[in-house]
Amino acid sequence: MNKNFIRKIKWILNQQLGIDPIRLARSPIGLYRYLKDLLRFKRHHSGNIKLMPCLHDWWEPAGALKNEYFWQDLFVAKLIYIENPIKHIDIGSRIDGFVAHLATFREVEVFDVRPLYITIPGIDFKQADLMNAAKLPSSYCDSISCLHAIEHFGLGRYGDPIDPNGLEKGIGSISQILSVKGKLYLSCPAGNDVIQFNAHRSMRPSTIIAIAQGVNLEFLKGWLFDSISYRFMPIENDSESNVEDRYTLGIYIFDKK
Image (tube, rainbow, N blue to C red; front, side):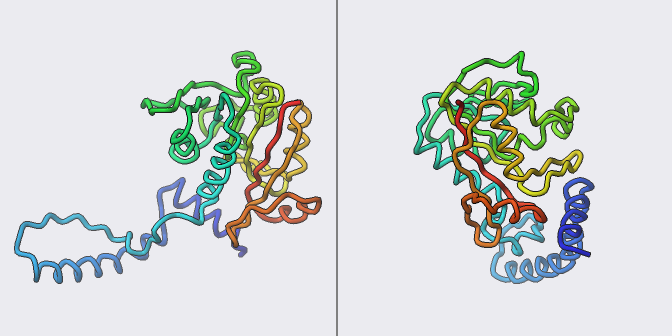
């Protein structure tokens, strides 16, 4: 039984069915530790105590730093900070991660098929279906980010319409919104060309680059995330062989011809 299969089973049990075998197994240990610490605390405290057990936090590190989202968000936010575009649009990236980073130093307009029910300072939110180009503006901005979002288009996971060509339509819409010489910062899973319905797609670097080039987006440079060293490695000519049999993250920069 390989590690990828085990990770997928764990993800289905945990994230989709609400069953976490590891937390379940740790609970008796956490309860024992909680009761022991409570008795020790009460020996030295005579005031009122309300009980609220937290049985799992002492196993956790200071932050979820192994998550590729964390590293991606810092990496691309810094690129945009340096570039300092006139008008930046984000499409579908995490508002509580990457977009929040951008909002600390500039105004950001966000397009997302999902609704947002709260107003956030520095963020101008618009609900929009990026697969429907007819309802989107043209040459609207000189900079666009779309991080870990394009791979979901058309799979229905986030309430978007089912469309096998959703990714291609989404990239076409992005090209339409972007002005000439504007830059696109795009990330998506890198691996064999596979649709894992309805989670996401993974694509070889050459595949996503070819789709973008078909709608007048020229590839400038890109990186693959190394989950062992937590570094972004430049995409080279032999990068195809490095991603075929494993899931990783690809970051790509394009400009509009």
